[in-house]
Image 1 (cartoon, rainbow, N blue to C red):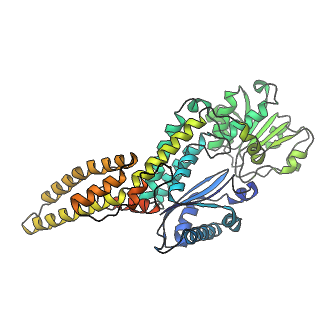
Image 2 (cartoon, helix red, strand yellow):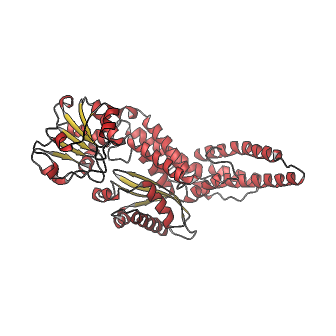
Image 3 (cartoon, rainbow, N blue to C red):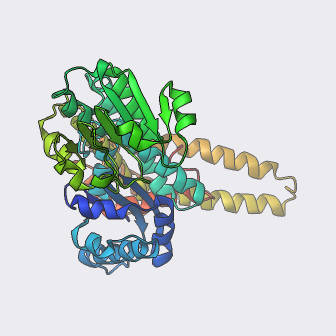
Length: 443
């Protein structure tokens, strides 16, 4: 069963989210360790969300409420184990999504449609890196890996719609838009950037797009010179001196806590805090002449932003999620067919061994033939399911091979809603990656 526990800017206060800045890989491992029913976990942790996608073996007699309570408790215990400050708050505010809704949500998140700044570019990369890290550590499963791969593909397709690839929204760009509406000229502005990570690089690009020329970078970790040299920026090891007389200070790091006492007398006009946890104390915004923009402020302005291709992107996401879950609805039939054929092949291989096939050539030939034979039926079954003919696929396999696979999941494939298929459909999809069977993702 695929589930998602999501604490995001829509359901969880920012003051709680900023206390959830944890190591995503460590959290995935901790979730798996807290409950034997959790087969795999992938954590997506960004500045405005903490989400754990789980592959769970729920008890057959468990109700949805029971399962939701189980995963909430598992994630809460895991957060406590990795040192998060607000596990109880997450248990109270986070939302749990079942398989079909979890798929649709992941696709929408990956496409930037659930971000504070709709259409932000960074999230797709963050989702991809989360999946890669979980795969490398062994925290992922075949089911999780497949749905994340499809989510990343869908994000690319959504961004390709209309102007999406050119409008490129992100939190940094949105924040700079808000500053730019009050700033006379980016070309003459003195900008100080605190941080040297991926988000800092994105911010540099956004600043240059707006004509900023005077950019000085400071790093709490001492990497300012390396980052500055790489990006053609001035750099400094003295933040106080750099801030003195600056027009804009932008923070995007996890290693800074700037208080009002740290701000020099010649204070910057604008301070943009993109850090999570918060880099800048709210009292800085009370200093005369200083305007503080933090994530909370940016979120309030986000609904005013119009992404020209948003509706087209949402359509792509809905169609892709529907196609994914409806195709998964025929997996019980596909798996039953594979298992039937593989059992026959295994019997023939055993006979060949008894007859003297010691070099394995007969086995190799039979397994290759099986893979080729199963590829087309598997591919066409999924295509028919997406077209609303999942029941026909199940009926054909039952009739031709005498396999009582049932048609409940296949019937869901005919439903028009993008969240129609049953949870059991995605459960069965995992069986396709068993070592003795051809991989479902490549069939």
